[in-house]
Amino acid sequence: MKKATARPKDVGKPFVVTASHNAVLQAVYRYQLLTCLQLVKALGYSPNSLERVQRLVKQLTDNEYLLSLARPVVRGKAPLVYTLARKGLNYLKSAGFDVREYFRPSKEQEKSYLFLLHTLAINDVLIAAANLQKIEASYSLSSFTHERVLKTTPYKVRIWRADVEESVTLIPDAYLLFGRKKKKGKDENIPILLELDRNTTEQKHFRRNLRARIEFIKEEGYKKLGEKRREELRAWARKELADTSEQRWLSNLFLFCALPDELEPQQLFLAPCWFAPFADDKPLSLLAE
Image 1 (cartoon, helix red, strand yellow):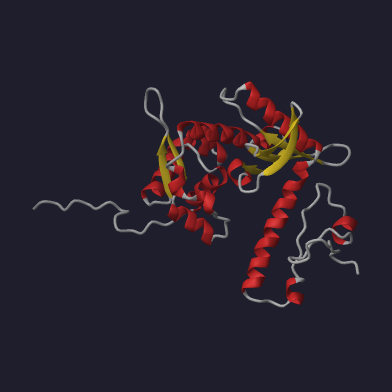
Image 2 (cartoon, rainbow, N blue to C red):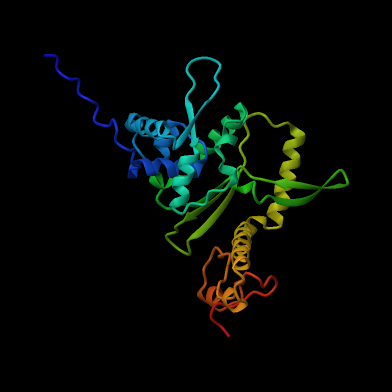
């Protein structure tokens, strides 16, 4: 009698997102586009873990949580680049992640060769920044904001060139905030605007952008990045409160603040630095009368 062929153990079983799958999805969410080699570094795994990461990525791609994009190359096999597919976006959204229009998978498939290379190069720098603490414990990457997110709230500056004033939209490739622990004195925060050039920028464009960044620094525009986020959250709160016609006393229970680099108790809790959703020009104190 012919022996029945054993069925693979996983056939018929529903796919379940494990903790390892979840870590991969969060890393792709954070960096937008990643190769498997970048994922190994972003997850803090050893170089010997590449096959494991490739297996996790294949499972997520086969089950439509990730979308794979072929990166064009002159010769040889192109390494695949991964971004979130619709099912992966919905999974993270249900977990509380902020998933917005700029994460649409259909947009990723339209990205040009140069865009892919540029984004992957930015991510190499961001991953290295996140891993700096492993080498030098006194430094840590407190946070970073990716170019794609910065595009949603561009910063505009006025510059003068050849006696002509013009408005320039400033969108850094990334905004990084490092923390540095000191043996003596106060710890400090170090903000960095990342601009990455891949030998594609001509002198005129470079100098124009450099002048815009000079004005940005003079205006201390980097300090306003937190204010932009505060105003975005207030706008969302206004929409929700308006949709349900809540009374003003209830609206005023919700206060928003862009935290300063140095948290002084008196400034944070007693000074008027908090804003209610509908009080545009009147900062409030959290505790003081």
